[in-house]
Image 1: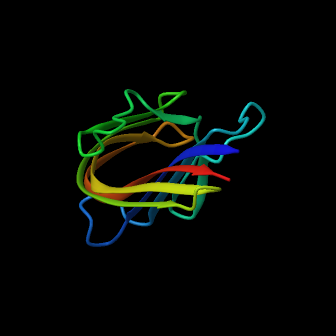
Image 2: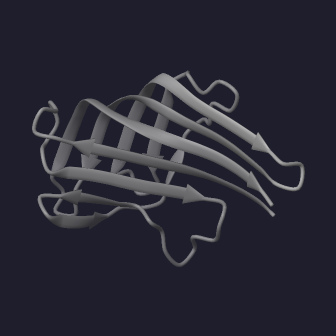
Length: 134
């Protein structure tokens, strides 16, 4: 079985120039997401559901180039400029895990359920791209 996924986690803090008390967690997997997705925004103690997210043009093998990450409903629109690729590749021949944890700075917008648009500036976070075979 081969599995590939992209995971993005951002956390705004009091020290961040972006709004406080905000978490964004999104996952784009190779599984069937026709009935449900795992993409949401936590803001001021509330969950805001957004559409599935994807990388506009996936930078495969060029992980340190900018990533444009958007949601299908247009409510999440970010560009991540990478600063570090924490790469590990473990191959046991019968199974393999190839992982890129890409750390960088995010800029863009997120739209909440009530239509309020949050502008995110210079937010540090990471994306994770993983290929598993077992």
